[in-house]
Amino acid sequence: MANFGIENKILQYLIIILNLKYLSATHDSNGNSSCVLYEQKFQLKNCVLINHSHLECNGNYNFCNDNKSEFFMLNTILIPYDSILKLSISDSSKLIVDPRNIIKTFPNLRVLTILRGKLIKIITSFPAEAKISEIRIDRTKLDTLPDDVFKYLSLPHAIDLRNNALAKINPESFNITSLTSLYLAGNPWKCNYNMSWILKINNNSLAMKIKDTEKLHCTSPYEGRPLFAVVEIIETLRNECKQTVCDCELIHVVGPRNSHQQINNKRQLMAFVAVNCSYRGLEEMPDFIPTNTTRLYLTGNKIFDLTKIVTNPVYREVRDLYLDDNLIESITILDGSYWLEHFRVFSLRGNKLADLPTYALENVLVQGENAVSIYLGNNPWTCDCLFTPGFQDLLLQYTNIIKDIHDIKCNLLINNGENSGKLIKDLTRTEICVMPNEFFLHPIDILNIILATTILLIIGKFIYDYWLFKRTGILPWIVTKIP
Image 1: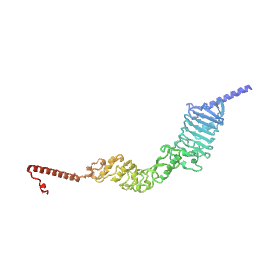
Image 2: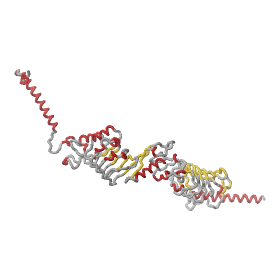
Image 3: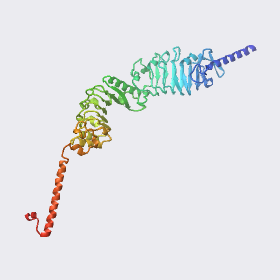
Image 4: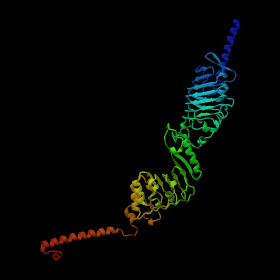
């Protein structure tokens, strides 16, 4: 019996030695691991068996079970691989996971938890034979998931992906009948139309399975805004934009950031939309533009009439309007309009403007605080004594707002070439008001000369009369006639 006990112990030690050999990842001639999840091997000394089925590991691991062994050793105790139902990994400094190897190592695994640390990649999908019912990956550096990472699982009822670096997910990967709970908060979600699946709320949709929708927030450019509400705005904009020939973009959203108040409705946010209808061959301004349009580009069309800015309410919230390179000859229709009093940017470069209501524009600039930029260059401006002096004064007074003053020039085809092409800001009044072959002196100047000459004559006559009286005692003729 004693010999049998010794032989039994020797057999156990042989099994332990064999299992330790198989546990270490093998290497090829180049020194690369044959089962690469991380550069280091599976360090059993960092693992603790919480109970008979829960293995908790801390550090960096390489799970490589080659099926040559059914046991692994932990603290001199042989543990069957298939007895582990729950595996927890935490605080890895750099972890790349291959779910196939985890399931191959622990075939009966039910719960997988990866906490903290720098999980940076999951390189394959979970295999169909996996029996996992719960997956939790929390507070790691994971930023992408394979498109089919969970697609082949049939048993999971809860997946927790909170507090990672995920910007997007493929909803098809979560098309699992058994899934009842999905947690996604704490990730920097990229809010765009690719997230529109979250709006499809019905009994079988993935959106209904998300338990923390109100805690999902966008990353830049809508930093901290509630994901659901922003995506709702984007989807509405996408549908409205289809009614136009334009390109549309949500450029900014104003509202609470990371507020504890639940905000799931787009009406609780203020959106700013840019619509680009440039070079579309438009002969008039569109009858419809998407809601919340604040910036509108209509450059390079054939628009000549601005009446719709005044009469159509869709333009009421447009603050930046770009109408460069059109056929606009007048903006008089905008005089006194709500839009002219509230615009921020107004660009009319390259049109057919010869003049404009200077007084109306000046009133807006004096009284309003909204105007930031006006562009008027490359128009055939009239340079005459009636319009140009006031226009020039406006340009010089508001150079901080009229941004292209160096492109505002006299029409090349007028003034017999005298002022054509000259910068209006640099013209003198003589250049503006005196035409070629015209008498050099202005009528007012002639009147001033006559008055000055008359005054000199009167003074001269007074001096002569005084001298004559002193010499001869004869009073001036006009004095003798005074009664």
